[in-house]
Image 1: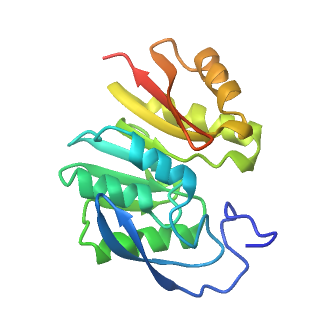
Image 2: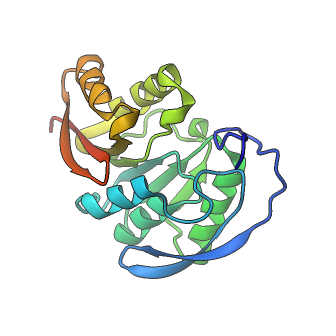
Image 3: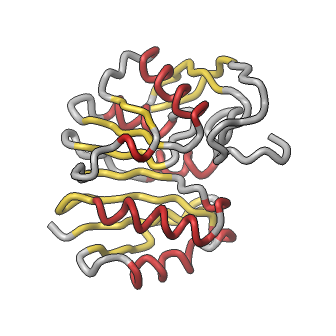
Amino acid sequence: MGSEHYFSAQPATPEERRTITVELAGSERRVETAGGIFSPDGLDKGTAVLLAGVPAPSPSGHLLDLGCGWGPIALTLGLASPDATVHAVDVNERSIALTRDNAAALGLTNVVAGRPETIAADVAFDTIWSNPPIRIGKQALHELLLTWLPRLAPGGTAWLVVQKNLGADSLLTWLNRELPDDLTTVRESTAKSFRVLKVQRAG
């Protein structure tokens, strides 16, 4: 991607879509990607660690993919929980369009992709899965997490994958200090230089 940031609302590069084959929810799937978004060439290592290491999402209710890219997390959530509503959010308009089109191509009518402000303020999430955009900077990342993690429903769980050398351990400490008292964050696992963090709301 060169110097272009995947967290730009409107990527400067022309949209040239291409089809790739990836494994999602235990089967190979054909999806579309394009330049100007996060990990356009396939499933990035962090997301692969997350998808391989988390338990099944809530089978119903509202689920969230925070920072959807071309949609691997949202698509997996949609395939795993067909009776749930999956919200896929991103600030990158190209990512939103790709996730929306990939969901439609897979017949996933339960995946809704859009900008963060399109989700009603009273929606609470039973499951959140995210490979959060660490490179947007610490302040912006903290604002992002403090906006969405407190929207977990009672008993809800968020799973975050963060690279160790990008501050996973300090983020864990910060989350436990800054989140509301009924939210607890633990390091659930470590794999391939990534930490998987679990944020649980008391039920």
